[in-house]
Image 1 (spheres, rainbow, N blue to C red):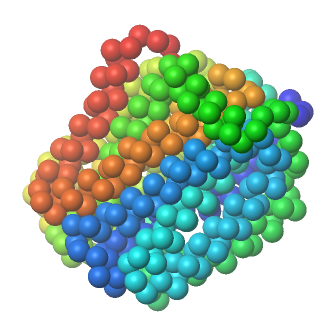
Image 2 (image 1 turned 90 degrees about the vertical axis):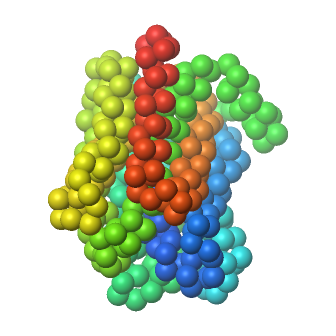
Length: 391
């Protein structure tokens, strides 16, 4: 593998592909109301729609992503992206809660191809610019996360929630063909069986303190992120009277937080990982009490909630890139497994945040939701300050 910096077009392709793939995890988030109503799910169980997708993603991180240390990467990526198109068709055709939830689990499982592409980019980049390259690719991934919500809301308002999954299915089919043509081959050198590969992951968790710490930090921040974006559409519709298009415009504001990814990559390359992480955690925590400054329902309250969304996305995005810079700097031959474990760890936090968000909002309103979200980044910051390791 060449150590020269990968071309700009290839970085762009990897970023766009990551964004399009990972967006599949978030299309249902602003649509939990109409989907649950259509499928007959109770309001306080609506969060399970998002949670099951994230559970599938976590399983894929543990069972599929490690294969990138064993199998030729392009073939693996194309196969999983193609399977995601099939799962999205299943979601679009769903007429019952059981069918949709099964499709959601499979969509999550297949969306892990994005987390094969990210370490792929790290392998292509030399050490001196690895943080920058990963940060640029992660910008695409994070834009996919943030644009998924407004895209889904707008399209559902124009057509139906089924249309969102039909469009994405077509996009994934086309992307599978494009990646097959454009990606270079990468054959790992590890000589392991699949069973040995999976067993080795337990050893990596036990023997890599930096992995455990960075996983915990991001689990706390991503839990707060998922809690916010699962409950915010319910809050916006119930207290501000916003339509799906209005919710889409609100979600679009969060895209501004994606600028944190390339900034964090440059901060990491300069060695300021610890201080950058602390700032990211403080910004994410501050987003929640800001949304409680004035009574809800007013234009000022809506403006503050928009600002909260931007700050939260900024903090979560920045800390994610800083964490991946640490993980990718550990052992190059284990990058896919380490990245899979890292992402799986914080998606546990995301799944918990999604499930908690819907339940807390129904039973404690936005005030209770905001204070739950506030506590999560503070837990990460406490851990960072307590442990004096440089990462």
